[in-house]
Length: 189
Image (cartoon, one colour):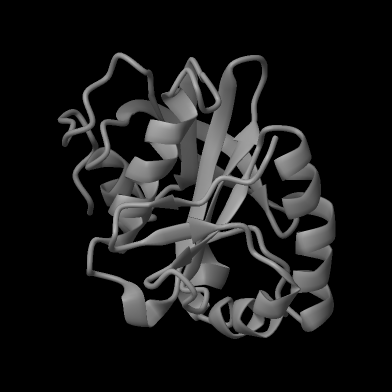
């Protein structure tokens, strides 16, 4: 797959490069990014280099792209969003956002761009985009809920984070699902 920059004029999604390594390392030191994702902790420069070499590069080659989220065309990395293969015609979306950018709707915009590209017949022509998160990750759930993802349940001990089994919320969106807010999600405690 050739690289696709996605933008709505407020966020720009581009392939992360070696020039972004230090910023990626800086962003993922955030306790919430570490709490809710499966990144290595502690996270070092070598982890970011490995991420670019073992996740980003092969992902673009295999139609499972990872984008850096930027707030200007040539701006610094403010987060990541990517699609990971989950069988024919299906991908899982994953993402994180730097603390200073949260609460501005940027992640919702990024998810909308990725879903549009993922479902587009001239994009990835996906049949399903799923989402999983550790139970309790309310901000992540809110972002996908605003983008038409339907809650499908709890996968008990469905994930592994740093060697420990964790319960996960599971949701998905199909190409026929409207992009707006979806009811039927659990109420945060």
